[in-house]
Amino acid sequence: MTAKEYPGAAFGLSLAGGIIIILVGLAVAVVGAILTFFVAGMGGIFGLVGVFWGILIVIFANLLRTRPEQHAVWGILIIVFSLFSWVGSFGGAVLGFLLALVGGILAIIWRPSVSTQATTVMQPPPSTTTPGATVGTAGGSDFCPNCGAAVEPESKFCRACGKPL
Image (tube, rainbow, N blue to C red; front, top):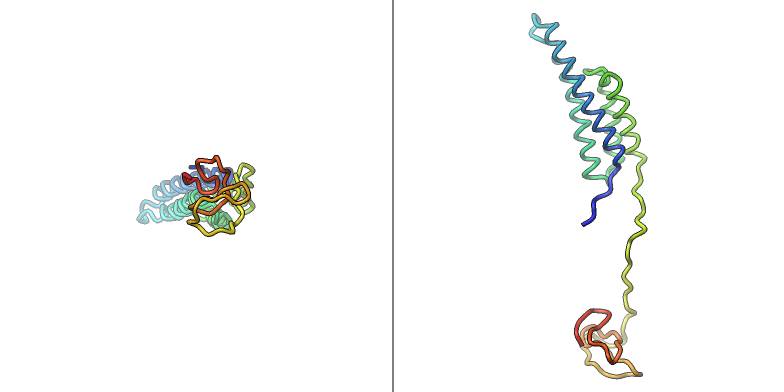
């Protein structure tokens, strides 16, 4: 089983940016709650909005890893919510915003690499005999009773279907 290819740099930058935005949002929430203690901690809600944006960025970064075929969608959403992070977490102290922004851009422009190690299986040419035909000699070669492909007289297995002769 091969590993699924995904935009690793975009994932890493977006994830780091989202985590920083969450942490800064939590700090803003704590400081806001302390400063507005006598107003029922309303300042803490401002920071929790920033935490929400960061959580969404982390979710989209993980979707970028698990569903890379939709990389452009996840990249756009990461960019949008990194812009929103200015409300509530001050852009993750600018660093979180920049990391998520670059990660989103990389996600949009990412292109999967073309695998040069793909193996191709050569299919035998279509046979003129019907499947299930008996082994018989025609022009120095026999035919597979299973698939009808031409086989060498001394062969013990069909090269086309692998069945014993």
